[in-house]
Image (cartoon, rainbow, N blue to C red; front, side, top):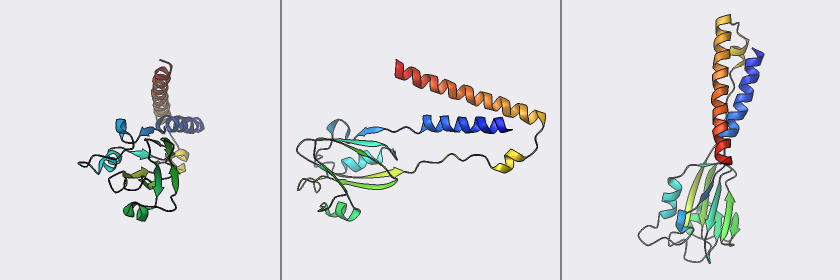
Length: 173
């Protein structure tokens, strides 16, 4: 039974490492961070709504003669901030989403936020993997259930190996 539990822990660690990967997303796609056309002032909120953001994902803002500010909800609604949480104006800003919740982004250039250069991003919490309860580990088992557990563990390990091989193959090739 202890070896099954050890196998489970190793498998959980591997699956967590494989499934929890950080993503870098280009805000606004090919257009970057720029004033949207008058037809679509919700462009950036539409873009944000079409993506799922997780903790440790990174947003890339590419722009010319502008800036990116992270502000409070109140400052977002007013389109101005005298004390932003984050400020950058280097033209190629990377911002890591380091906690779950809402992030409010605006342009720091006068008039740009009012013309639609703003965005709200909702970051989801990571779902923890819960180990089996101690009760299921300590219950007596028959030889048949041990064999089934061994077969299941073996199958899971084969699947994980195949996934890892395909990931490594994709990186190499």
